Image (tube, rainbow, N blue to C red; front, side, top):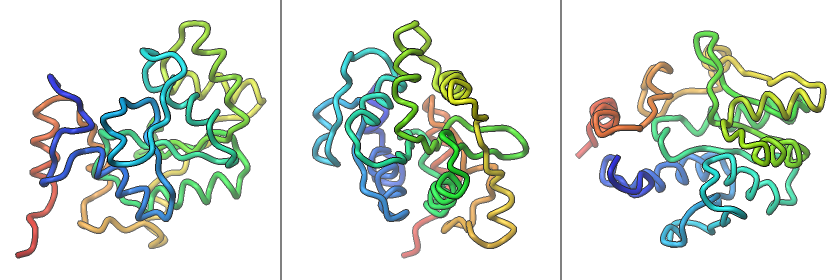
Length: 197
């Protein structure tokens, strides 16, 4: 992207503010995992143990720093997700007791947002130590170490039951638009409704 993705602006707010806003709307306290200290003005920062290990390193640092059983992970590059989906995922994890809970849309599991049980930490650290940094494959391997599947919640189900409604009436296919390039940021801007004057 040529700049710190967390600080790129969407609808007049940096992406980090969108991510934190989603978590706050879901009623969750928020910290920034694996981030540079310049983001500390937005929320408490949990530094990586070993910087340069990517998102999985940040996830491990966050799980090591919490006493909560469940942790919700939301990257800055999914600014169109509704907070109600995060709430449903956390409720699903608590109900099933599964260590890894992800959303799926159209039958395809999404890596994020993710609800992870703190018990996964040593297994995720083992993936990092082995040089495997991919989050989705690490989630699969860690769940398998606990003899569990990766659990997915089909977003279509809570939509049909009325549990999840997007505040901007965006269809679910747009919720998972990932901001990885300037064109993605422009696409997200176009997908957001114009502010009401």
